[in-house]
Length: 115
Length: 113
Image 1 (cartoon, rainbow over the protein chains, first blue to last red):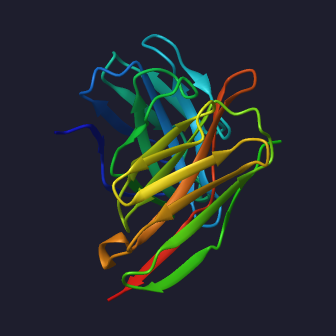
Image 2 (image 1 turned 180 degrees about the vertical axis):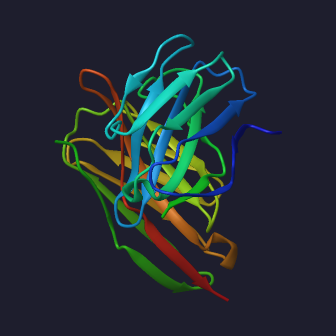
């Protein structure tokens, strides 16, 4: 029962470095999401992919890019990391886009620190 | 702008107590509302999903209610156990020119043995 798998679990970056967070789901879900979670601010949507081949900005997309590689995989890229991007990142998926009455399933999270 | 507020921010109760967690939202035009549990260092686990047309959902010792007109949802936990200790988050799902999910900041629950 893998569900949603994201890697890496932990990462420390220097300011200006780039990196990609990987996410894969094995539930044949159409929609995938990337969130960040910061203390006192709850979860905020960065980007989402309602279906394979489409991606859209969420609430806080600046500084990030995404790729929906195929139906299973949705990656998040930080091109030039900044300390403000220190956060916990969660990948999630659902059968259909949010608001369509589906449960959302989350990965275990990726802890990213930018120094 | 839709805002989701959870009160209290933290709660400590003795084992066996029944408790209610609150979630309020400012815009009643939601598609559905979902309650999640988050354990320290872990992702979110869905507990209950309430469609906008529903009034409540139940799963085991958990019961969630939804009152769209007043912008409120409650999560009732019966006979609390130490294993219920976690952070509970509610989230509302809406479409305003794009799909959006608005999460509350959560209520951190500690159940004392």
